[in-house]
Image (cartoon, rainbow, N blue to C red; front, side, top):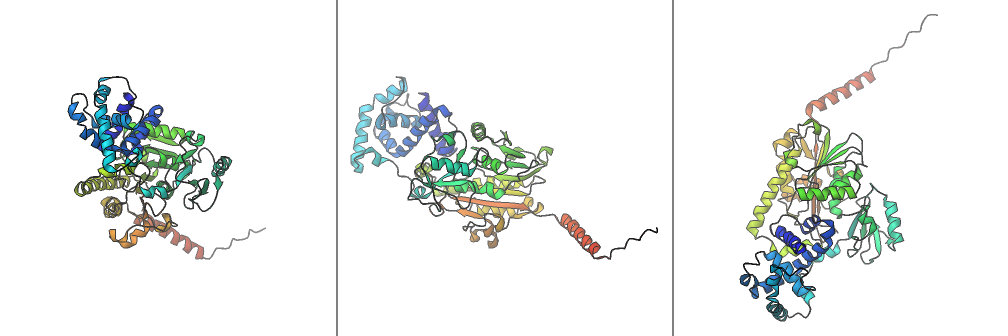
Length: 467
C-alpha cells in the first residue's frame, strides 16, 4: 500500500496548492518515481469521473471508518476500474473498496452511457491545445559536453538538424535562435529514457525558463559570487553554473527540505562544481554579513501562481481553480511576497544586477510588482533602475504591458511570453541594475576631467646633460 499512500500524498499536496504536479513528482524517490507519477497523472485525468462514481456508489459514506482519505480512495478506485486491479495486499482498506466492487463498476458503466461514450479514454480530461504548439526543449549541459557534440549525438540517433524548427517533422530538430545551447524537438518526443538525459548531459527545460539566467548574465571569473535565491528543482541553477563555466561561487538557496534534496540530486547529476547549496530561506539571510560582501548578481524566481504553465500536466488542475475572489486574494499575497524578495535582494551592499522572473501571466505578479519595487526605499537608496531594453533579450519582441506601468516607457525593459503564441509557456522577466552613486560619479568625472587637463598642458622639454 505504500505506493498508493505516496500517490495520495501528492494529490493531497496538489489540493493544498503546495506545488505543481511536476515539482511534487520530482520529490518522490527515484526508484518509485516512474510508477507513482504514472498513477498520479492518470488519476488526475479521470478525477472528475472517479469522484462522481465514488459519490454515486456512496463508497466513503458506507465505509466511513475505513476510508477517510478521498485522495487514497481515488487512486485505489482508479486501479480497480481503469487498470489491472488494486496492486496491494489484502489489508482492511483494500477490502473496504472490494466490498463495493460490483456497485462501483455499475456506476461507472451508467456514467459512460449518460455521457454517450464508448471507451474509457473518452472520459479523460483533454490537454491544453496550446501545449501541442510548444516544442520539446532540450538544453545542452555545457558543464559536461558541447552543443556540437550533442548535435552529432542526435544525428547518430536518426534525427535531422534543420533550421528553422519544423514542427511537422517529428525526427527533425533545430538550434534555438534566442538561447545558446538550446535545441528544439517535436513536442511528442520524450527523452526521459535517453542515456544523455539520465547522465546529466541533457536538461529538459522550457525556453522561457532559460531567459532569467541569460538576462542575469553572471560573470565567469574565479572571483564571481552569485546567488540563486529560490533554486529547486535546479534547472536555472545548473544554467547559471554553465554560464559561469564552473568558475567562482554560486550560492543556491532552497528552504524546503524535500525540494532541497531534489536540488542537490539534480546539481550532482549535472556536475555543477561551483555551486554551494544552502537549505535556508533567502529572506533570513543578513545582507551585511561579510560572507555576502562579494555578491554582485542575484536571481529571483519565487513562488508564483503558475498561470503561464500550459504543459502536458498542469492543465489537469484547471477544473479546480479558486473562484475570482479567492484567486485575487491569492495573487495579492503572492505579489506581496515577491516584492519582499526583490527588496531584500537590493539590500546586499555590492549587488549590481537582480533578475526577477515568474511563470505567471498576471500583471499583479509581474508589472505591478516591478512598479511597486521601483518606488520602494530599497530601490531609491540603492539606487536601482530597470536595465535598458538592449540588456534584456533585445531580440525578443514581446515586451511588458505599458498600461500596467507608472511610466509606460519602462515596459520596453520587461520581457513577456504568451503560451500558444511564442512557442513557450507563459513567462515574465525583469532586471534591476544599480546606478552609480552621485559621489562615485563625481569622482570619476573629476578624474576624467583632470586627465583631460593634463593631456592639454604643454609638456616640459628635458634638458640635455652637459658633456
